[in-house]
Image (cartoon, rainbow over all chains, first blue to last red; front, side, top):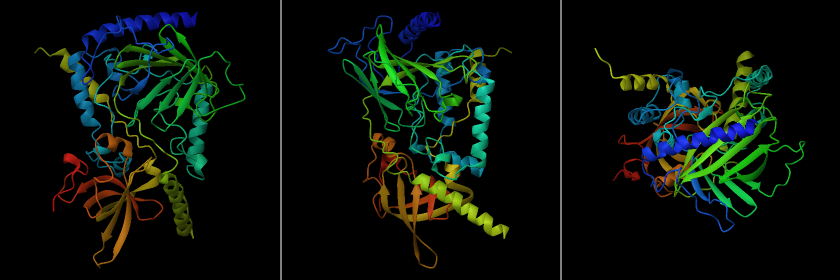
Length: 333
Length: 132
C-alpha cells in the first residue's frame, strides 16, 4: 500500500516538475525537452540511458527555513534574489570576527564550489516529504543513540583515528552516501550502465557503487558494508536502487544500521536527472522521509579524489590532540 | 502604505539562511583558533593532492634565518575545473597567508586567506601571478 501510494505521489510530483521545467529557464544548460513529453534515449539493451556525468551542486537547503514554513516554492523573482543573497552569504572571502568561526570557514572563496543555482523546481527545501520540508524527529531510541554518540565524541575526541568522523577518515562523504547530498565542492557522479549492472561513481570520495540489476538477493544481514548492499531494478523508466546492510557507524543524520534506503533515478530531460531518495528507518526516525535533487548534466570530467593518499589532516588532528595533552600535563605539574 | 509581498517574502528567506561551513576535515581539530598567524613567504612547492592541497613557502625571519611552512588549501579537483594547474603558482612567487597554526606545533597553518603581496586573491584575476 505504502509503495503504491508512494508511486502515485511520485507521478503527481513529476507532473508538477514537468510544468515547472516548462516554465523555468535553466541557466547555462541547454533545455531540449520537458519532462511530460520527454522520452529518454535507450541503451543498446533497451534501458533508459542515464549515462554520463551529473552534478548535484545546488544551493537549495536540505530543510526548509522556518520563515518559509508555509512556502513550498519560490517565485522566479524570489529565486533570483535568493541565489544572489545566498552567494553573498557563502562567500568565504568575508572574515567573521570570531576566530573559531573564521577558522571553520577554512579558506577564501576560490576553493569552494557550492553551485550557483537553487533546484530548477524552485522548491524551498530538498526534503519533499514530510510536507513541512524538514527531516523528521528522531525516535526516543534514535535520540538516545545520537546522544550517546555525542557524549563519546566529547569524552574521546581524538584518542585514535577511529574516534574521528568517517569523512575525517576518508571512508564516507556526504556527496557519495549513499544517499547522495550536495556539499561544498566536487558534487559530481557518473553513471555507467550494462545489461545487468549499474555503476554509480562518486567523485568524492572516489566511491564506485556497483549495483546488480539481475534480481539477486541482498547480502546476508550479518554482512555490513560502508556503502551497504545495493540492488536495483527498473520501474518503468526509473532506476530504483534499494540499499540496506549499513554499518552501525554509517549514521546518516542519525539513522541506524537498519536504515532501508530507496533511491530513484529518472531522466526527465536531456540535462536533468531527477534523483530522489527515501529513508525508511523506524528505529531512528518517527516517519520516513524523501529528498529530491534535480541533478544537472555536466561536461566536466570526474577527477580522482585519492583521499587516503594525502590525508595529512588526520596526522595533524591526532598530533594536535597529543600535543595539547602534553601541554596540559606540563601545566598541571 | 502598500508593501510588495514578494519583497517581504524574499527578506524573510534571507534572514534565515546561514552559510553552511563544511571543510572536508575538521579544521577546528587540526588548527588552533587561539594561534592566528600571518606569514609572508616565497613559494617553494605546491602539492595538488587530495583531500587538501599544500602550498610550501619559505619565510625569512627578521634575523635573516629562513623557516619553511606548509599551508593547507582546498581540493585541487575544483581548481582544475577553474583552469588552475601545477604551473599556476610557480616557485618563487611571493604570497601572504593569514591563517591559523596547527595544534601540533609544527610549521603548518590553514590557508584561511591567501593573497598575492599586492593584495589580489590568489588564483583569481586570470590566475596569473603578479608581473615582476
